[in-house]
Image 1 (cartoon, protein in one colour):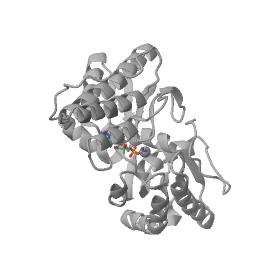
Image 2 (cartoon, helix red, strand yellow):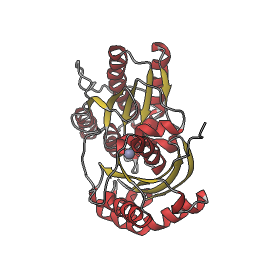
Image 3 (cartoon, rainbow, N blue to C red):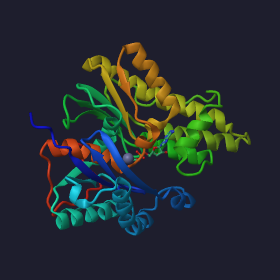
Image 4 (tube, rainbow, N blue to C red):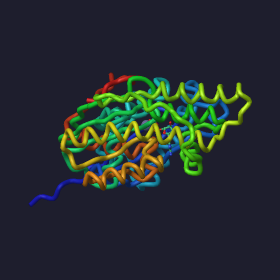
Length: 337
Ligand code: KG4
Ligand code: ZN
């Protein structure tokens, strides 16, 4: 019997403030990854400044690519295809990775695989354990809050998503209210561990859909903070963090539980930066135990933006026959399909 040939995918990610390249074998084995993060640069501005992010991607992309090949001890000739995040994300940032991918594809005559950023987050799980179908994917990041049903590789059916702010965006904005440095999500998570749920906040969008809404919760936190100030009362930051985290997580868990029961799936994967949240991880674990569901949450290094997840997704997109040519353009918004 002929042995199956290994497929090496070079993934490139530059949709926000991380410039990253990675080589993954057969969609499951990370060979080498390099990530250059700009967090320290954007911190002073309280969020990512798109123009500055693009400039840093330009500065970093070649270095990151060279370092990645060096770390893997491989040459471009040994790569089978190049997977690139074409969107969604910051358009100027996306373009830098895309141009690099197109250039390499052209020079080395390698197939170019377009990867949706959220497909990347989902396939971060494939780097830990091969995906088992049917499954539900909970995507919780700075730009997305979605429940996606997958009956097979690269078949995405969105059951619901946020109607306004994404959960990560909401975490970052609430973190600003309690004067935490960007990105505030992880700091708020830590702070919540020491607080009590003493502030009453509204549970968002209590309806029968699989959709979410976080802008009302965000406004409620801002109003509460103003009211306390006006009354000359000091805000208990730990308690506010704990109260916010409880309600935000409860909203996600309620909808997810409903989807698991109604869709009768027993595989659940979690993806995106907010999957690093300790409070969310605990609640997901409890729910998975109770409903007897196999739960996969990637380690923190695969939760936030990285190119290994893009290369992993790229492998399955490659098997699915997805290809792009040099006319491929970046998209700041695009549905996952
Ligand atoms: O997936 P990601 O790296 O970028 C996007 O594609 O959006 O997610 C970044 C988001 C940020 O909003 C960050 O504050 C949030 O994930 N985040 C967290 C935690 N770690 C990262 N939010 C809450 N708790 C955390 N531990
Ligand atoms: Zn992301």
